[in-house]
Length: 135
Image 1 (tube, rainbow, N blue to C red):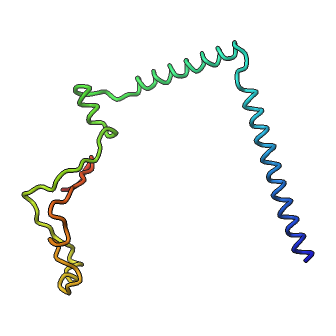
Image 2 (cartoon, helix red, strand yellow):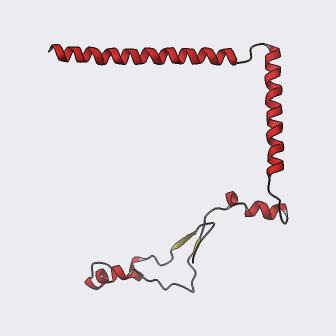
Image 3 (cartoon, rainbow, N blue to C red):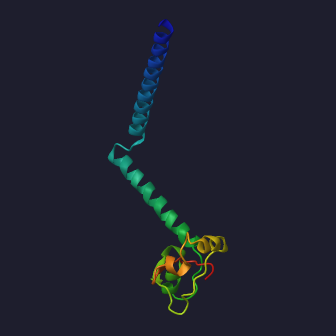
C-alpha cells in the first residue's frame, strides 16, 4: 500500500509540476508578445511603414522572378496546372469493348463471377484527369 500511495503521489506531483511549467511558459510568451507589439502611435506608424515596404519588395520580387509568357494571357492562364480540373464525360459509343484481367477468367468459368459485360453499367461515366497518361 505504501509503494502504491508513493507512486500516486509522484505521478500527481509530476502532473502538477508540468502544469505549473506550462502556465509559466504561456504567461512569459504572452508578456513577450505584449512587449514587442507597437503601443504608441509613432511605433504603429513605423510598423505599418515596415509592413508596406516588405509587401512592396515581395511583389517586385514576384514580378522579377515570374516566367516569360508565350501567346496571349488568356492561353497561359488556361494552361496553368492549377486551373486544370478533372472532367466527367460519357463513355464513347464507338468503343464499348471491355476486357477483364486474366486472373478473373477462372472465376468467370466457375460461375462465381458474371461476365465482364454483365458487371459493368450500360453507360459508365468516365473521369478524365487533367494530365492523363494513357488512353
